[in-house]
Amino acid sequence: MNAVVKNLDMAQPVEDDSIDDHRNAPQPSPDCLYGLVGEIAKAGSETTEANPYAIAANAMAYLSCAVGRGPYMPIGNTWHHTRLFTQHIGRSGEGRKGDAVALVKRIAHRVEEMDENAAPQIHAGGLSSREGLAFMIHDGYREGKEEVPAIEDKRLLVIESEFVNILQQGKRDGNTLSSALRDCWDGGSLRPATKSNRLWASNPHVCLSVAITPSELISSIASKDLTNGFMNRFLPFWAERTKMLPFPKATSKEEVDRLAGKVLEVLNFCQAARWVERDTLRVELSSDAAKRWRTLYMGELNDRRHGERINALIERRAPMLLRMAMLFALCDLSTTVEVPHLDAAVAWIRYSVESVKFVFASAADEVEVAETNETAAKIVEFLEAKGRVTRWQITSDCFKGHANKTRIDAALDELLTTTPPRIVVEEERTGHGRPTKFYELAAKKAKKAKNEQPRGNARDSDPREVGEQSEVSPAPVPPNTSQLRKLREHQNQAESPAIACSSLTSLTSQGDEEMDAEARL
Image 1 (tube, rainbow, N blue to C red):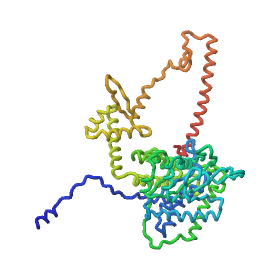
Image 2: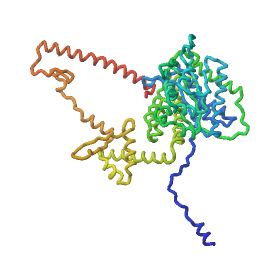
Image 3: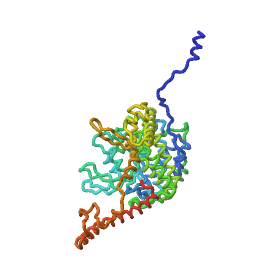
Image 4: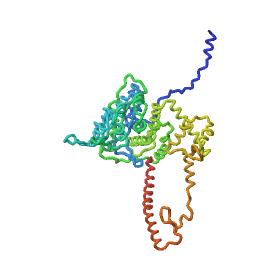
């Protein structure tokens, strides 16, 4: 008996090579709680179980709606406003989703009492269709013989405590609610889905604050919504209660009044009560913020090493970051985005990305993505050393036959589909049978093509020769007067568009210099 016990005590643990699927929940940075948004978050969470970051997200959704379409930031040919769609993900009972929006509702109600023109419309009754959404901010319509006047204030905050309802509506045949919400995020007008429906809503400024449990989100979302741009217009974040209070207390009326006063100060700065006017307050990046933005944009904001599914869900990180940075600047009563505003917005983007990965990717998925990225990095290193190689060389020389075909294929696909592609592939047929594929770094290929372009020489400037664009062959003898006249006419015609192009280039260069301060996309 003692021998048996002794053997049991000395038994070695059984090795388990399966993937450990345990992970920490996303941990947001305190930088998320910046300025007025942070003040509201801390006030609401101090005496309740509500998560401060969930309160902050609801405050951002409300403020992004309330400031309206006056403040804008030009990005290329698109005018971006502060519109945000926030998505609170948390387990039922643990997320405290209702508590997270309660203080924001109280502040919004107090702002409306102070100045009803500055306060936006809030709808908490759920959404069912494009027509129902347009009806709340319609351009006017005829009902029988009566003309119903338009709703001029297009600001609308939709609070949906059961986001699953919107997802279910999107699955119904003929329901275009999800496409309408995509249009709203973009700021596009809501047009009728059918010829018989003439209910329009021009220039909407609709923001959303939605909540859902992780199980409902995964089970109810349609596969098309993962890739059609609907879900990546939301800022998802995982948030649950951080403490337990048997007797939570409401935020004092004095504190609500103080916060409402600060919100109203921001709305007055943005001229939110003048909701008929649009694009009246231009917001720009400071020079330091522009440098910070350029680094972010060329780096993590376009990092696609998260796997295809996660990449699709976080595709709009860049414009979403700028919208939040704009909002933080406006809450500081400024039209200039500074580095701290960008840093606060970056903190939210990182929090959101980690939340998406936590909900939509298992530990096994993350291991697979990491292995694909590692394989891709080895291929890039191999191509840098060897130049142009075949697939067989990648398998045999780079990986010595120790990497399976599926893993190499996934890595090559990743390198070919990045924006811009990091590698290029070409086919060459040297005989019968299948053509051989050659892989090369895109940068080296482009450099080689540039070096192979024909260079100019002294003969290129010979005035007796006419360029390729002219259909006149070079004259073997000096031209006569008639030929010279025709040649000059031809050159004058060719110079006119060149002058126009030169002028356009000058304007473009000037615009590029201006966009340095705006950090163009």
